[in-house]
Figure 1 (cartoon, rainbow, N blue to C red):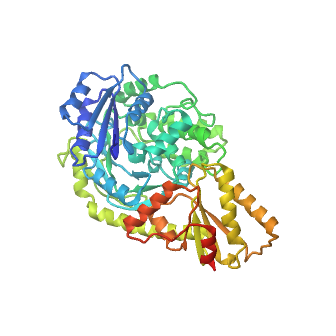
Figure 2 (cartoon, one colour):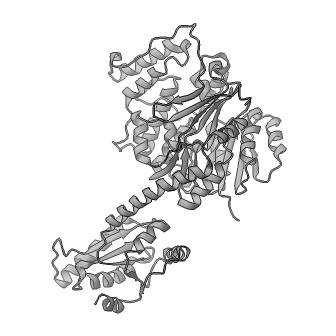
Figure 3 (cartoon, helix red, strand yellow):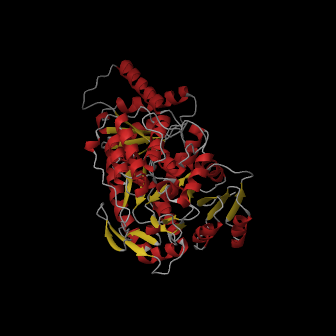
Length: 556
């Protein structure tokens, strides 16, 4: 059975009034290779009625038989996803109408494991904070980059980057293999009551790099239902019931209890820091390059102390308690004075210059007659640069990045005048592989032209790289002893490990290869893939060297 390219999971609970627009933003797109999983957390019948109204074969609807915590419902919804790439959409959010076509182009052209973006923000007319209602905030920059996952993770912990820069399932399409790797490590994917932030941390840890676009592919909607907004504006009466309900359903476990470096609190910034610290303890406790910066955390809390001036004093006490816990003087922090009660909040609109240097646009949605997140997503598409323009930017960046990567790979392989490759099947008996490798390596290192020869040995991701290194080292030592060889820096054998590669990377390597030495026990899967790479690119296949005697003749 074939699986769709994209899976979108919408976990929902008693939010049929906004769910209908979130679903429409997906199903209205002219893109067939997807599935939409609606994971209903024991809602009233209206939710099922909304789903049924679409009558679309791409939709799969599941309803839990009892009320679940948010984390449990997200985990259950994720378990139903069968697509190659997975994303989660909030039930008051929306995808921009060209999102799936753009993702497909990027996946087909560049084989990214994860595609992430910076969502735009739309505040519904029902948003908890009245002064922020009916706004659509867009970034007009279409900058794209390939981000080093561990570097971004370090920046987030340091307080130098927002967690929204992480590859969360909430702002990304993540390859199913990454999700499965995390599940196999932990027994399940989600471990935190803050599943969106948590997903960004673990995805970043299990990825080497990911594609990131400042141009949004989705709209983060903030309505009266939004849990995160309810925490941020908890003192507003309408939000307190939702927060209390959420907290009552949070499971008591290590991930959700206050971390020893923090204090018990309902503060949003400290709650996010709690997720960061517990994730570090679980996945990378020994990594000294990724450490939470408490001072910067305190400053970020201070920066938001007037988010709701009725909580100013309580937030100040949180800052004071956490600072005392870490022996940090309050005088070192920049804590704004409390805004007066009669302060009038003025909604921004028009062109905005961000601290990042990017240019943003804030649209007054009431004036634009936009009343829901679906309309906001269509308005966003009309303002943002076209698909063609965006893909041109991607091609320019990725061509430059690919060229630099190829140079780095070739330098790592230490190529010489004559370059040969072998593709052993490391899953067979070690004795069989050692016998063949010894013959090949001995022929090369004892040849008069050995200092001009480089041998590349392929190792797949199913094999133990350390064990392979030990085997090659033992073979070389034995040959040196048997043949009474002595090597100088100039004559030392050049043997490099060749790991997994993309089509473009292989073709770059192949351009420098003299041929492939065939083996009795070789990895047919990768050799078949190499043949496909050459056929698709129109490149001639490499010379196949079938035995050691032929190899000797070629070298001579």
